[in-house]
Amino acid sequence: MNTDDRKISSVWNVTASQMAFIPMLILGVSLFVVSTQLSSAQGGLPADQRINGKRVWAAFEPHREILQRSSAVIYTDERARVKSLYGTVVSEDGHILTKASEIEGKSHLSVRIGSDLYSEVDLLGVDDEWDIALLKVSTEQPLTPIVLSSDDDVRQGHWVVSNGSTTRIQRRVRLGIVSAETRKISATKSHVVLGVEFEKDKESQWKVANVSEDKGAQKAGIQVGDVIISADGTELDEREDLIELLKKKQPGDKVAIELKRDEKKLRLDVELSAREEKMTRNEQMSGGEDQLSSRRSEFPRVIDHDTPLTKVSVGGPLLNLDGVCIGMNIARASRVSTFAIPARELREIIAKMIE
Image (tube, rainbow, N blue to C red; front, side, top):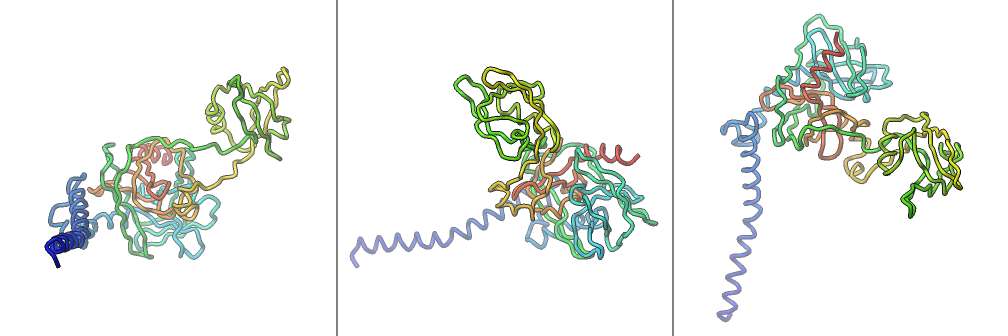
């Protein structure tokens, strides 16, 4: 081997050893980042609780105990064997909040809090705006209601704790991070359709390009080539004008459409049809309807966090690292987002529903 070959071999050996060290370096950096995040987040863990995974999980035992006694497992089968979702205990005398759309139409409800099973459960009311149902169990012993946060200081990057999986008695926790600023979640699309497709012509008029069969537009007499002027008296300058109008409508509602056909103005009442929902690619990758909540939009204000829950894991409290309830999980929205109703709004909902 000549001198140049020895130099190349030496360089290769050093590089190979360095490359072998890279995975260990990445692992060390990752553990350091997680440890640093836990120490710098709200109510961060002391250093002696961040030595290893066992110590970290032990630090969350108080949170598990809070969830064990102040959240409920809700069953919708007669034998109380299959968990449907969680609930949040909000009063000593048996009031529990949960997600309304997940128990809609269920005739058999039972609730487990700790090791106690309650078979007599009353549905007292529903708040459609927040998709919340108020349940009441009959109990001789006072329950332990969740302690709601007195402030609204929930920031991006804060660590949060939720109910994870559960056995018939033992509760487990799941950790996440607040991933976005608290905000309103609007409807991504309307629930109804007119049954037409539009295109803008050269004069910037909305012209009907296609009319769907057996939909309201066809039944009302709208034709290809008609120019849509207004809907319910609202002039349609942009496509979004119609979308915003339809978001407020339900299947079966009628919309007064003013249109122009061959220089004549017509007014037709169109009955709206339900939109046939199609899963987006992101929703399909998130597990589809098996994992995502059936209602996951149209909330006035939510905390957005990345805890990997499923649709049967919502309804329970969302805790900060101090063990204080900062919200109630209300929807699994995507593979990276879970929504929670903030404590401030939750307090108002409780006051309104429990009078």
